[in-house]
Image (cartoon, rainbow, N blue to C red):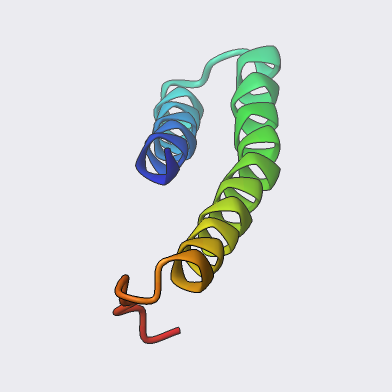
Length: 70
């Protein structure tokens, strides 16, 4: 799900940049900003969930290896 969250945030940033260049109304720019701001906590939640899932899987299945450098 992390790639979907990153794609959503990127789309809001891209849309905001295009609207800013096009001289759109402020309400559209605020909508793009709200999308980015709301997407960041969702992304952080998904990252934390994935890290916890990898940790639980490593504890319950010792043959499962984690190749994550972080």
